[in-house]
Length: 154
Image 1: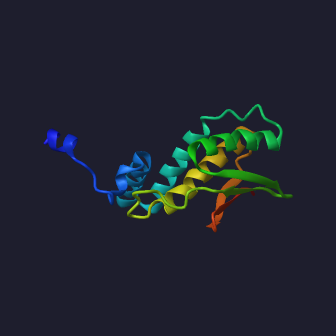
Image 2: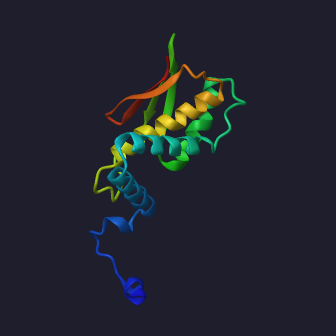
Image 3: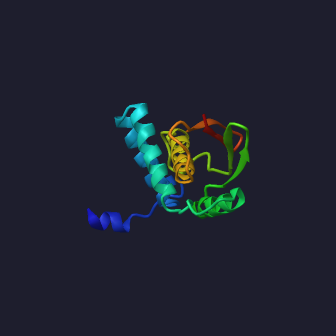
């Protein structure tokens, strides 16, 4: 059995041979969404987003451009695009551009359900590290035409 696995030569149509991390991510998503409620899955992927956010220290930043440069360096490293911030009177608006809209091997289409809570969790954690109060909330408004719009505010 082990010998068969080692000697296996994948066909050109085997989707899982090109990007193992995308396949793993897709399979985790399928498992989570297959066994958890939607609320539980959103909470799980939000927590994963907060873990991603914990890779960066942002509490020492007081400038929006410096904050975005640091965050975008992480997103580009992951191949997850980049973001732009816009301040309004009552919220911080984030336009996240270039997030992959699909993952290789995601036959169940779970990435579209995983990505919003992942990014919401990450941005929420960063803004809370900067002093965002408990009355502020982070929400994904939409993900269309390659742009995810996220709002942090009341």
